[in-house]
Length: 314
Image 1 (cartoon, rainbow, N blue to C red):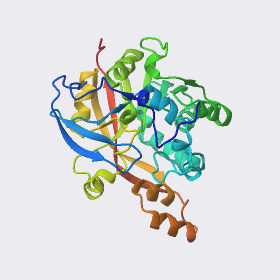
Image 2 (image 1 turned 135 degrees about the horizontal axis):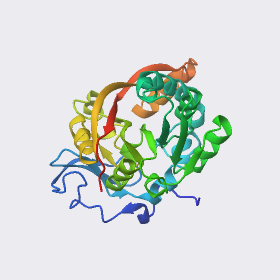
Image 3 (image 1 turned 180 degrees about the vertical axis):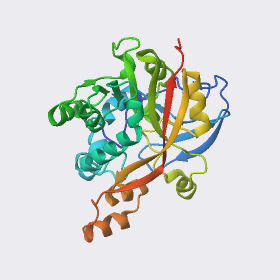
C-alpha cells in the first residue's frame, strides 16, 4: 500500500458521481446542509435528504477505504503527525476491550445464535476476529470478510478464524449461505449501500438474522453539544441514521426488525477522550495511570438491531 499524505488525499479517493442528485433510500433526493466540516485536512460536508438519510459529500469510495483500513491514520494516530484522530489512538492495544465487548454481545444475542443449534455465521468487518472467536468457541461455523489484510492476518494468527480479504459485495459467496450476518460498527462506513445490502440479502437464508448496530442520531445529546466536532462527522463516515431511517433501509432490502437492544461497549478513557477530542482528559488519565482501565459504557448512543430476512430482493 503506497504512502498517502493526510494533508493531500488524492481526488480518486472520492466518488464524484455520488452527488446531491443521488439518494439510495428514497430515490427522490432533496438535500439540505447539516454541517461543513473544516477541522480535518480537507473540506467536506454532511447533508440530509428529505427522507432523513444523512450522507457525506464528497463521498469516499472503495480506494479510500482500502487505503484507510490498512493505514496508520486508522491503526495508530499516536505514531502520525496528524492532529485529528480519524481511527484509533492505538488499535491493537485495545484488544482486551474488543474481546470483552464481543463476549457481552454474544450473551445478549445468544438466543438468535442458538435458535437452531449450530449456525453458519458471517461477520463483515470483523476486525481482529474477537466476535467470530467467541462464536466459534460456542460451536458455530464462522467466517469473516474485511478490506484490511492486517485484520485478516491478525485473526488467523491469534484466534484461528478465517477472514477473507476484500469487499463483501464482490466476494463469490453462495446464495442462502448464512444463518446469521453480523455487522458491528461498519454500516456507516459503506459508500455503496444499495449494492452492499443487496449482497447481504442474497447470501442469507430466508428467516436468518441480520444483526447490526448503528449510532442513533435522533435526540443525540453529545452530537447536539459537539455539533460538527462530533466524532461521527469525520472522513470514514459515509452515512448517519435515525432509528426511523434505519428501519426503512432494512425494510427496503428485505428485512423486518424483531428486536432492538442497547449496545454496550467496553472502553477506556484513552479511547473516549480521543473520540471527544478532550486532550485534557487524555493527559490527565495517563498521568494518574487510569487511561486504559476497561469499563462497560452505553456509547454514542449505539443500538443493536436484530432483523429477520423475510424476502429476496433483486
